[in-house]
Length: 332
Image (cartoon, rainbow, N blue to C red; front, side, top):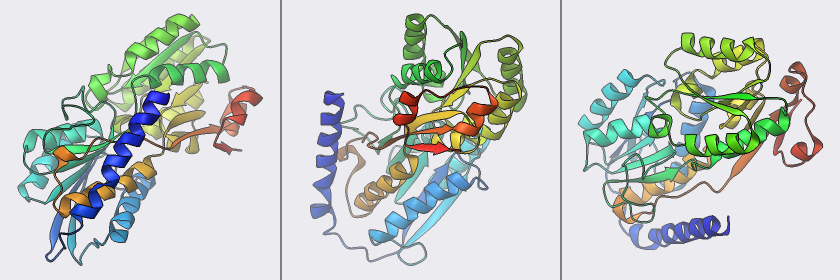
């Protein structure tokens, strides 16, 4: 943990040194910013992320319609839409493009090696080939990583803490949109499962129908549990995941806080709103002349745990006081 904190401090210090030099270049013309997000346009959480980004950008001197023009596309977790919008945005030749999600970032990166890209909500930027290293990205892309691979074990530990009777635990994800096509969290998840003597199940899904099948299978026999990998598909389809988990009495842990607020049992992960606000600084620096290759990839600095006591009660679970004491938000 100390090494990780020191690394974050190093990255933060490197980024902090940029504004003094980069801000010398004044904005004197209309700039174009592309935004490709994997969220649905009607998703309140996705809109809140974008709003926070634009608010911070305005604080840094960039206002949509005044000195920048925002070109925003919402892909709603659909791979075909992601590819179509990626081509469209790169064709507009913006000064920089903000992306959210692994599949979205990959699609934009395939379309251009010259337009500066700032990514958010990407789990494994090195493993997915976006950057050479976190400290030295080395190309036209940099940004804000969202999760470490070791989180797979953390989610499993939390699930067995809040639902100690679980013995079969599936990790659900869409291989077309998940980090490393779903492999990024698997090794730590499986190692923790061996240690805790539970059966790990990889559960790739591509549709609501496949979500239904997985949940029915988990609910058919007692002691089934679920971990929902944080990625664009599971976020867009969260209502179906949450409702079927409740219907089939399957305790579930999520990697994004909005899923617990929407009715899921427990979530643990980074504060995405904070990540999007921090991304505005890198867009600002690029608009003022900085190069993505010189801006180190940053890691999350804020994490939050949310427990939904109403859902726990419906599942017949007693939340341990030790777990409640570590929780940032309790929904009653």
